[in-house]
Every structure is written in structure tokens, then in C-alpha cells.
Image 1: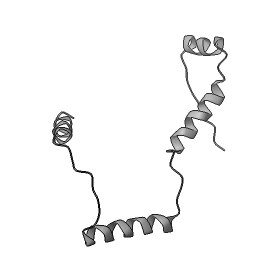
Image 2 (image 1 turned 90 degrees about the horizontal axis):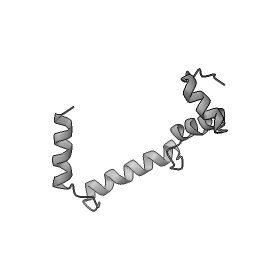
Image 3 (image 1 turned 180 degrees about the vertical axis):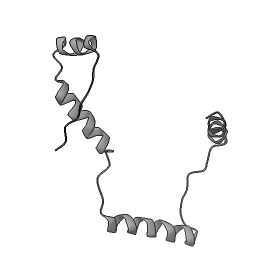
Length: 83
């Protein structure tokens, strides 16, 4: 187990405590959401099978793909240019 050090401004800390919020519990929940993307875990073998199946569908020409929207592509192009 690891220990994290968190620095919080005094006024913010007092506000959190006055609301009865369990900071430790909230931080544990937050960290758990960082590690869990909501999708069930799959094995390496299953991941390789899915990729191999997708490659085969592509090679066979029977895969279904979502077409790219021109407005979206323009928006992303402009976004990248402005980074």
C-alpha cells in the first residue's frame, strides 16, 4: 500500500469538513474511477483474438466501419492546428 500526501488550502479544507464529507473515502472513490474505465477486463488471449478477428474482417472486406463526418474532421484539424 502507498501513502499519498495531499495539500489543500485551509479554507477549502474547513469547507469540506464543515459539510461532513469524508475526504479519505472520496479520494479512494476517485482513485478507483481512475483505474476502472467501466469496461470489463479481458485476457491477453481474448484481446489478441479480437484484434485477429478484426484484421481478418478487414482483409476479407466484410467489416463495417463508421464513416468519418466531414464537420468532425474539419473541427479536429482546426483544433490540432491551434495547439
